[in-house]
Length: 111
Length: 114
Image 1 (cartoon, rainbow over the protein chains, first blue to last red):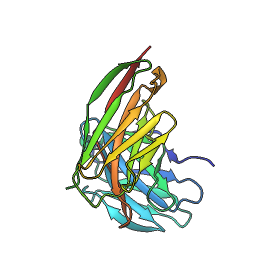
Image 2 (cartoon, rainbow over the protein chains, first blue to last red):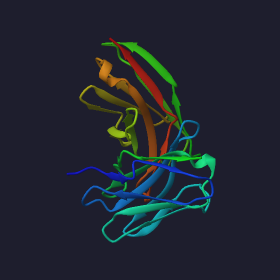
Image 3 (cartoon, rainbow over the protein chains, first blue to last red):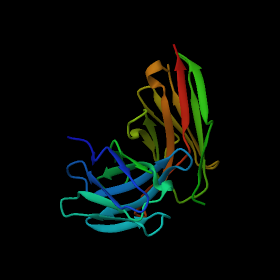
Image 4 (cartoon, rainbow over the protein chains, first blue to last red):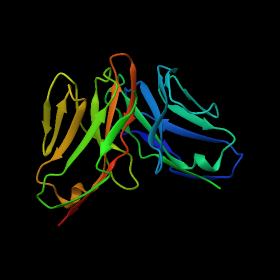
């Protein structure tokens, strides 16, 4: 099976702009979770989608949002970018929520 | 109640040594404890995971030891190799309650010297 894919792999944006990241889960997986990884805060949970519904949400501001499509592909959006949003954004897919398999991530740099 | 504390922050061992990484959790509702390995420029890769109804699980050279009463679990890497040099993360989740989001430790950077 193909693994989790994320696009784009690298992105440079300016403060105030918005960005959309995409994730394609492993075939057959219905749960997609998003995480932010930074050197200071480590890996932090953003949100989880299961069958197109947001099932869990982490402690991030409303500027961070996501959605899941009927084919389980997911997108996350960050509006009004801040310098502190620079991070590696990781998507993970799972069949029922336990074993999560991560993609390579999208490296977002905000200048 | 949601924290997972991981130690040490970094670890250097010689080839063939047995590095041990420890994690402690607070929330007794957690029922799933995985370990991930991450190489630079890559996403974390699931190594091995354990549920609280067993005290030890082995997969190849990797072993998880779990102490439910102490709320601690650890990763042992037998016969470590230079290729094992990576950052290791422990995590915990409450999957039974559909709260499958992983709470991660801060990571341990392991260096295995030839």
